[in-house]
Length: 393
Image 1 (cartoon, rainbow, N blue to C red):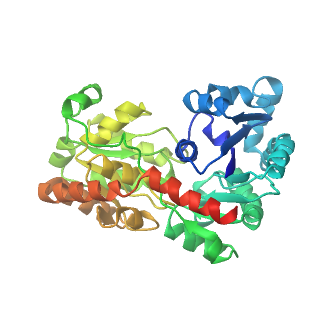
Image 2 (tube, rainbow, N blue to C red):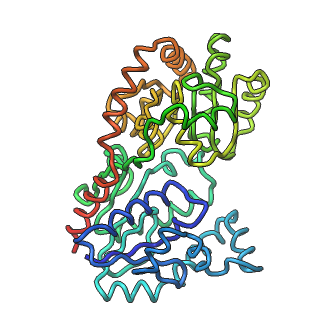
Image 3 (cartoon, rainbow, N blue to C red):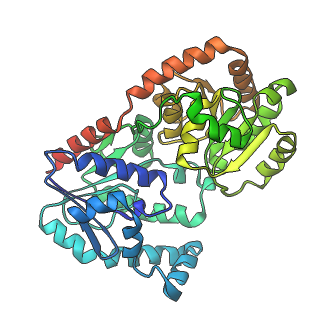
């Protein structure tokens, strides 16, 4: 079995789809039934030792990008904000790799596109569709991204021999929105990296001291500050808690700045001045792992998820989880979290207060969460993905 990937999602800064691609590649490179794995960025092919080296040091990916510097690069970057030019930009990127894709198709490689919209390919091919938020909640995305997916995804679905989705929920959404045969849509859950685990307090001490917080004495939320993650209602619910609870358990919001969040920042400001909300922005991976492991509660009342990997990562880290009772999240938690209506500030407030005042419930959810997270492994994801490949070659 010979496999081909578009490696653009691995370029820094790495997104969730980039990590998904990385974990697939790491697992595939260890399998005896995989004869070869190759990938491309621009006109550059990564294969064999070159691919192995890239998995360790991704800087070579950026060097392979066409027009990465100079005036052309600047114009292409600015085109992201212009709908027509944004689509043209993606067409140019695809045309650059057309010849190498044709060569791999002739040599019998199966092409797996891990990032929604596939390049045209005349051989067996698979696509992963992580969610359909651009259709369910277009207001959560820049219009150019919505237009790009609306244009490219239907063609991709027609081309694909199999369509992998992250959850049963996303499978049903795909069947509801697009006219695709059910037997071609395969739900495969994502995995949790082994580094997400409980850590002893001494290991966590540096980041806790840096933020001025105590182990098991804060509420953690980790996400980009954007509307889909529902931080506005989380902050409002937190603000309604008794002041004693807010002082005892400050809310720590970790994540890069997003978009459409001016109202959120206004809501955060007075609580931040009182020391009840801490917003450190983006943190290192090591710091994040230690915060997950130290939180009294991990709060993730997202409005829409195709899977909800941060919830699984928090459970694996030994954090009690408060999350949403909508979309794919109940499928991920499988009863191992306290689920609330994410559209209700009252429900979020009540859930927070219940968890922060009931140590027995927190302990129970930690136990259940660790068991559930242990079922979600990248090895299982790779195994099931290979079953899809074998069905096409």
